[in-house]
Image (cartoon, rainbow, N blue to C red; front, side, top):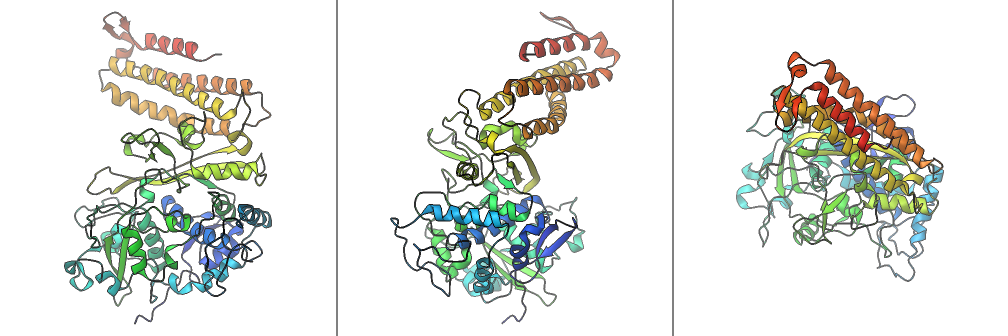
Length: 562
């Protein structure tokens, strides 16, 4: 029996930024929930890791506050075991009051800190949060692992392992393909502290590729799945502190019926969890979804306390119409019917496209067939119930690892993080004729049209210079949108329902015109004699840098109502 202990409830492993000192700290789960209001933000090894940890923390809070109110009392319509803090009887839907959950949220938000029941819950399940426990954190024992994998993949064979350097998403290196630009030297790539391993365990379950080939044995064959979070285009809300961030993302009411929460550590045995996963049924509760494993993991420790990690794939449920997931944007499934939606996954082809350019994915602009993220629906509910101030500035953000698109590896190639802010009253404006979401989307559409005008301007110059026209135009177009990002996000954040809306739209159009002409001028200033002499084109005649600049100005005049 392993005498070691590293318990996530009491040992420091979560990285945060202190509000007062603005310095990083490493804290335990107890410290985090006790002092969440004193920490500015999560500050792990990468932004996507912070998102995985955020969802893990939310699984704890969703479980606790769906059973207990802000005074640490069980809801009257629940039967709770005083020792295990779990629900013992099905909820009578005639007695269930969703308003009780909203009252809990409101009381917590107003008091500015979490209540003692969270720490009591963690104390009750503390043994499940130990990396070296009898039921180790996010792992299975050797006997449990051997019971479900093929004999040739059992622990004693040493097969089916995943290196630390592959689990560490800053490296993501297999034994076949070295990562030349890794932040660690070869000798250090497989070295890891226990705090680091805890963070990467949570992250890896969410952002797993498919390079490892070991799978559990099932009656029906299944493909090794990637991590659940890897298949989303995430969206979450950032607050001014970790407490506020957790509260804004704490979705306590999703349906009229009560949904019992069951995170992975509440399963009596891992056999029960594996049996549930073999059915490939989408969970209906967020705690289960946020703690979904993509891999069954067992860890053997050497004398230097370094891990050998055994990993086996678990069957994964479909993400089609998985609207229980609140933290993703959606798009119609091209292979399904018009009623089917899948997460709008980020790919390498859309890396340069900022969040604001896809504004309609985050709020149902025209009330049509689009499907807005559940998180935005939740925030709208809070605003509608008066639990959020109308002038509250909402910070919507994303953080995601993007895969290489290779079906046989799905290795991460880049991390994308972005955000924009907007007042709650603007995002959820209901003004019939001048509704802000529709007007914002129209402004974005116009901005994209001007972006195309600029692209064609640059492409024409590329044609004069006899270079790869598309590549040349795409390069400068990306720089142009980078130039727009800051000003547009500032314009968006400054909107309010008291504005003269036509004046605010005109304000952006003027700024947009100035920005595009400045970008064009910089390109004009780098012109060569070839640009000035130009080329002869059929039906067009002479095309040089001056004529294409005139075309750009003509298009601006046509498209901008200045």
